[in-house]
Length: 330
Image (tube, rainbow, N blue to C red; front, side, top):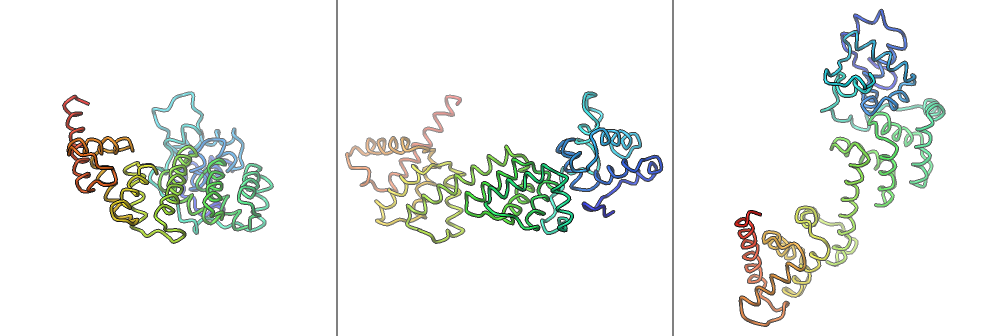
């Protein structure tokens, strides 16, 4: 059933109770069965009340009616203290636990009149639009306003989440609503649905972008785009190996000392072997170098070492460290 805000899939059980339902009960059920309404209800009673346009008392009364009619299901383990809406969040049908969001181009489109009504009657949405425009430094078109409303209503993303995405877009020099919408759907489908989780994800993305810029400067790449392979290697260094810029710079310097020019592949070989040898910090590197000097009974400088021999010593150091730890039960 197409009910204004989207397609509503009404359970068959509702037919037997429809004659006893009030007009408001039917309106609330249609809102519940609409994907965006269901998502709002799972986010909390306040959000669904705002979405539906009904009062809190009307929503709770209707939920009680539809529950008693067998149209919605309540988990037997829910506590008596919860409101009907709170209980409904965990067990109403149809479930949204495994549903992916529709592509952005399948969201409802609003006319100028509809948008005016939304902005006039829903102050939270109006305030959110104003703040998004301020962060992005531009006035939105009707299409851009529709996109923000879609993120708020359909994906049920809160104000903080949407504003964090706006600020991130500005920070990485992509201040467009299209980019924000695209990222929001991707993050939602990846399970990033709260502002706290989003904050952690954006921090890792921004940290990677910062270190990527430092690496680009280090290797003299300037403004050219990184290749797919280069992006993969840098991601391994920072995400898998968890090396900071100091470790990467140390490997870079060893690369140049050995072959007299920058080489991302050679630097990758160094970092990969350090990772295998459980060498995690510059201090670990210096200790491995010192042990290599002592083992070979010489006083050559760090830059004069044969790199392959040093790697062998580093790997040996890592394996011994692992075996000693195992023997001590660590």
